[in-house]
Length: 362
Image 1 (tube, rainbow, N blue to C red):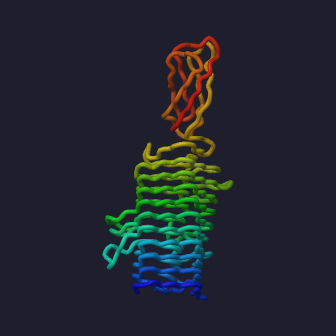
Image 2 (image 1 turned 180 degrees about the horizontal axis):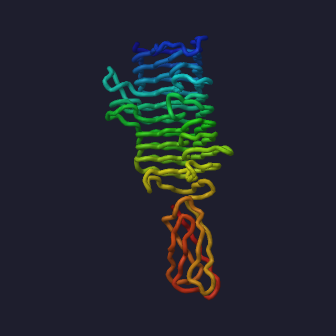
Image 3 (image 1 turned 90 degrees about the horizontal axis):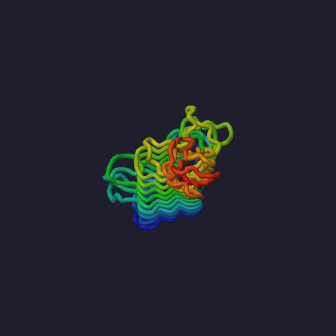
């Protein structure tokens, strides 16, 4: 098929949920454009596979209770999914209901995926997976205003939202933006971001129940990642792996991280893990279990003294300091820098109690 294909208000329903076959119910191959609007599928194995098509639009569709993928976009050049619902209330062999990936590099008419948007969609008990295969790339992808909820038994994937490479090759995952997302009661990882370059994560909230095996957000082999406005809230009594776990990669910037109610993992009580020191750069305001990544205050050097100990209240040991004395104390400097405190020293002991304004940052 080479021209436009449109489906409006179609229903594809199988009362025998999770048929044992593996064939797709409907396959669109190498079309110029495919438009799905108001369609509903239920109880099939793989109801829709859109293969090698240039432009795809799905609006207001419902994909429910399928044995494998509800919708596969494979080799699609550009796609826009708006207001769709994907759901599954029982455990199946594969709980990924939306799969986006380029056609394998050796396939005829293989192309990169450039311009994928998923907006205003709901994933109830299922996950979304974006794969980079072989020499094909996924570029300029945006996922926004989406909700994931009640994923307790993922038998295929480890996360509600998975973005990763699936095989070796020269293709890349690049220019991804994830914004205004809500994850509610996810039993495994909320987000898994691997082997990507240029990723922006903004305004994401994760409300997590008990989870003894998985990180809330896991980043691996990723470069140029900017996480801004990530909130991880753990309900009372939960016991979790890390809120944020970053391994390998480079240039990972975290700004506006908020971790609340974290009960610890392995007894160390550390919600943020970086495989090597300095892998994460903290900027701006971050609140991690009652501690900050930057802070400021006033310390008072007593009369006739040349030092004062300050509790900095930071999540990590500070590396940046700014001191502003309110009187001439000669040279001022810091010493005894530790995980909880540092010492302000001065050259000249003041005749009366003297304040020093301080600013610190990790």
